[in-house]
Image (tube, rainbow, N blue to C red; front, side):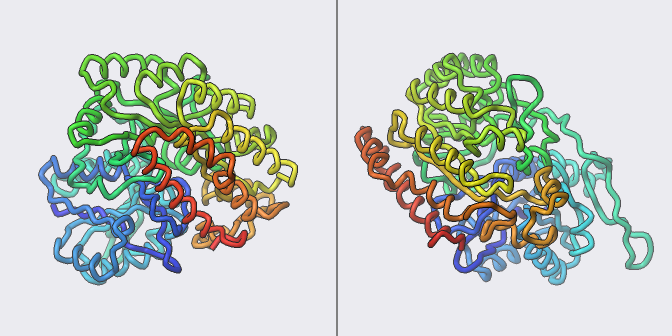
Length: 497
C-alpha cells in the first residue's frame, strides 16, 4: 500500500498551530516550537518496514503553502492517508477529509488523536472519514488495520469504521473499547530520515536534538498514575495508566540517535521514566556498558514529587541536563481540584533538589482556573519567580498558558455542569487559546504574559548570562530569546491573538 502521514498546513492570521505531538494547542507566532510526533513516526517506520510505501508530509512544521502540500500528496497517489486530530482544528480537518474523498473516493482516510478518541462517531457524521483509531497506541492499530485491509486480519479493539449495509448507506461500527496491552518493546527503532527528524526541535534544547518516548502515560511512584483533570492525553489516550519500554529497547533508540550525531534527546513521555528508579539504574548500566555515557545529553518531562535527592544525583550521572516540570499552580487548593496528586511543597522541594544537583528546569504554569482569585494567581507568580531565580543557570526557562479544558476531559465535563464555559461545548475552533474558554475571576491573558515575562527580568537574565560557558549555551540563549519574543506576541497587549 501507499500510505501518507500528513499534517495539512492549517494557519490562522499568519500563525501556525502547535498540532504534532502537542497536548496544549495554540496558533503561535513562535517559529521555535516544532515538536516531533513520536507515535506517528513510529507508525510510519513500522509500515515502511513491513514493505509499504510511506510519505511523511508535515505541512505545518515545514510551513508549506497549500499548493506545494497538495501537489506532493497528489504525486504520491496514496491508498491511505493518516491525519492527527485535535479539537481546535476539527472543522478544518473535516473539510480536508471531504476534499480528499471528493478528489478520489478510493483513498481511505484515517483519523487518530485525542479528540477522536473521545468522540469517534462525530467525525463519521461530519465527514467522509473511513476509519478512526482510538487511544494512544494508534501505531499498533495502524499496523493491524493495514493487515486487515490486505489480508482480512481481525481488527483489534479500538477501531471505528463504516460498514456498508445497502447501496450507499453505511452503519458506523467499532471493534470495541481500545486496550493498552501492547508490548512497547515490539515497536521499531524510528526511521529518522523517513520522518525528517531535523525539521523538529524547540528553543530550549541543544541542536541537533531528537525526541523519544521511553514509555506512555504519566507514571508516579505512589502507585497507579497521574490523572490531572485537564490532561487530554492521560484520559483520552492512556486511561490513566503508565508503562515503559525496557531499558534495552530504549538503548536501541539512543544508539541510533548517537550515530546520527544528536546532541540532546528529549523524552516526551508524560513524566518520563523518572518514576521508576530501577529502570533508571538499569539504563545507566547499559549506557556505561555500551560506552555511550557522556556522548549525548538527556532531557525529560518530570513530576516534582519524583525529584528526590537520590534520583537527581542519578539523573546527573546519566547525563540529564533539563527537566520539564509541571507546576500548574501555586495554590494547593487548585492542585487538589485538578487531581495533581502532589502538593506545592513537593514541587518546590523537587525543583530545588534538581537544581542543587546541577540540573536545569523548565516550569510549566497555567492560569485562568474558574475557582481561583487574584490571591491564588499571585501565589502562582510568586512560586514561579522563586523557582526561576533559585540557582539560575543558562537553560532554565518556563512556559505559561491559559487553562484550556479540551472537550471530553474531566475538567471540561465539570465546567459544563457548573456553567464555567464561556463558549459552546462544540465550538471547537474556540479552544485554540486565542481567548479563554472558562470564566475567570481575573484577567488570565495578562497574568499569562506577566508570568512569561519573568524571563525578561534583569535579575534572571544576568544570572543566566553569568553561567554561559560554551558556544552551545550562547546559541541556547539566542534561540530562547527569539522563542520568548514570539510567544509574547501571542499575548500582545494582554490579549491572546
